[in-house]
Structure formats: C-alpha cells, structure tokens
Length: 309
Image (tube, rainbow, N blue to C red):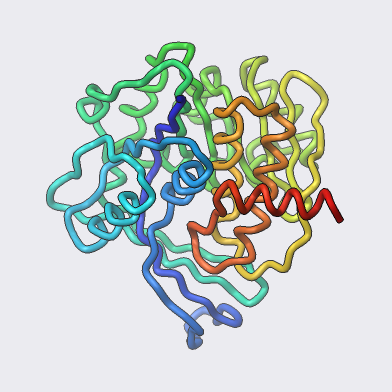
C-alpha cells in the first residue's frame, strides 16, 4: 500500500471565533477558543481518515505544544518518522475565524522549522509513495536546502506533491527552480495559483503552470465552493463543488489535498478523486477547527445524497 510521507510542519493552532476582526489597536471578545493540532497535520489527518497510511517527516518540539502535536498524530494513527528535537517547542499559529467563515493566521515557527540531511538519511521511501512538500518549508533557512536535496535524490517511482501555500508567489527563487522539474502533483487554491503565475483566471493559471512542470504532472487548483480545476497534459477541466452552509474555511484546502491524494493512491481516476476531494472540503467548512476533514464513509454519503437528489 502506498503511503503519504509529509515533510511539512505540524504546529499548534490557537483557534478563535469572532464576529469580526478588530481594527489595528482594537479589541474584541471571541465566542470560542481552543488549542488544536494544525498546519501539516490537517492534510495528514485527511489522508489517514480516507485510507492512506501517513508518516510525518518533520521535527516536533519538547514542550507542551510538542506534546499536543504528538498526541494528535498518535490519535489519528500517523507514524512519526523523525525523532523530536531538543531545546525548542513546537510552533504556534493564532487562527481567527470571522462570522463570514474567513480566517486570518499569525504563525510562530518552532522546532518544525529545522530539518537536516541527517534527519532524512534514515527515512525509507518505497515505490508508489507520495512525498508531500509544503511551500512553507522552502522559507525556513534551517530546513529548505536539506529537504530539497533529499527530494531531488528520490527515485522516479516516488511521487512528489507540492503545495505552494500563500507565501510562495513566484517560480523564480533558486530552490523553487530546482524543485519544479521534480513535481508530479501540484495542489493549491486559486489565489495561490494566480499569484504564482500572474494569470487572470484559474484555467489560464493551469496552462501557465504546465509550462513550469513536467509534462506528466497532474495539476489541481481549488476554486472555493465552486469546486476545483484539474489538468494533466490536456485542457483544464472543472469539477463542480457541493453546496453547503460554511461556518469555517480553516483546513478545507488541506482536507481537499489529503483526500485527493488518498483517492489517487487507491487507484481512482483524476476526476473521481477530485469529486471526492470536493466533497471532503465541502464537509470540512461546515465544522469548526483546522483538521475537520471527514472520513471516507462521510464522503461516500455526501456523494450518494447528491447523486440521488
């Protein structure tokens, strides 16, 4: 069975719900607040809940937040592939969700921002595995070069997934240039794809992205409640979303990515995997918190209800 090897960052989210963000210097009362595992954990939980075994290839800290991260991964059945680092705790993200379901993040990176060639040297990767690389990782000086070197040395049978995140907005950085030819699957939201390419719409962005990536690369760009767009050496295709009442968009894209990869790993065609991912993202936005991806049975149920409507 293929696995998902996630090289991104698990951090702890301080999740708060407010009616509206205050102006700079202002103050508001939150309706709720809780500490939850987030960051790369969201994608891993989504994949694991949908039948794809997951290994976390990132560091995790020694303090209270590191404990929370490890507990959350253990509860999901996620295997921790790298020993924790000493002397530093796992990082923290303040994730504020407004009544409109829009979310705002402020992050502090801890132990997960460091990774060495020695950390990765003992990792066993098998043919068919999916290695997930986050654009956030390329921004950490203590991690980026070692990670990219390791990815570029992987055998061709290993599928490399890249999620640029909101902070990688150009193909021009040296590490990005090195990584592009090795990407087998691109997954991002529309804003990220437009920012990366300079395109004016998602269909155009997919065409422009294909110019940067290998011909065999599969591209998935999410379009919020409209679903997603996909292409693989062909014209972009739109896969419709599912109509739901959104309360929190935090983690919806991560749910989409994890469920999409799980579908591919189980042999589903691109469009069927996309539809399952759209269903998972739709269910995720109806729930509060970061790691709100449904399991496979819930995805099946939503697709069945929609097909019968």
